Figure 1 (cartoon, rainbow, N blue to C red):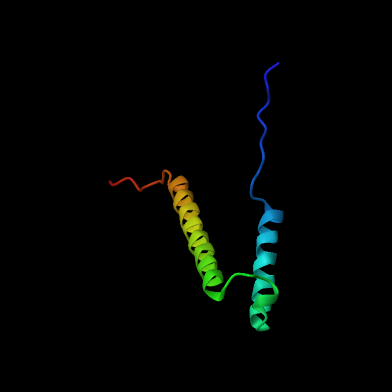
Figure 2 (tube, rainbow, N blue to C red; figure 1 turned 45 degrees about the vertical axis):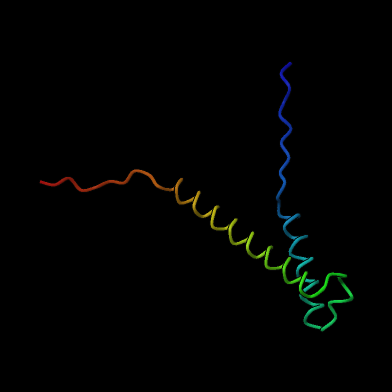
Length: 82
């Protein structure tokens, strides 16, 4: 019998929702002026991490869009000249 590949999706709606929930909790604490209640990171460290998250998210979106645009390039009909 041939072994079947074990497909595990690393990123699904649930995992991304968990990430968004964590960022939302952090945002709420920051809005309330109570960041110390949710992290032991210094403000500089926290801002550095958030900048890294933003950078990585933007780069990921750019890569996805770039690869999608390459796949969507296809044949198109052109009018035959007389």
